[in-house]
Length: 260
Image (cartoon, rainbow, N blue to C red; front, top):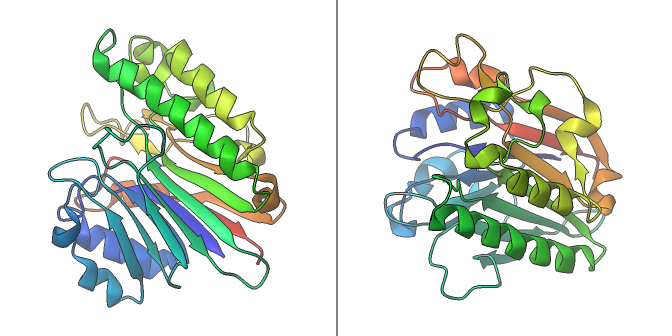
């Protein structure tokens, strides 16, 4: 079973790119971020024509997450628990029946947090606290569970081509990185680093200053696997070539394969 995450940076702007990648990669499940569309405006029929079931948690103009799947989920929840007043569409969770046991997939778009010293950074850290609490509760179920998406966190210096350029950015602050480590240390396996400690492994290249051409990237899209899921991990990949396509997102798909 192939499960992927991809920040597409606008479903309408990236529709043809998304359909091309889905046709090429054929993931069983993909979590999308930054769909930038209300639910009723999401072009579901285009994905359904490729055989995908569509679940969205949208928001007008920005944010928004979705889960596309070849099999219909048996349960879907929208929104991250812990703050009923939070209206930003950043989390969606679905449960799928498989031949082995249920698979719970949480797709997230973690707040960026910039600029530093503002409410936006405080919101990022509060959101990460809520994610930590929800993840801990999910892990207690001892089921196959995974959290994947755009975390907007550069975990370590090796995850940036030029770490010094990010020292004043919310993605690379000690508080952000510590919160990410605390989440992983609940008992998750960070899929990419479980299979490679090599530098130069990125999932995002800015549109500015020829970042893609210079490979001036960062790794901020992550897949965390609970023990019951990591036991079935068979392969991990980043489809970096998609960044070179026409009208690309600034992110590329990251995926894992699990034995069922």
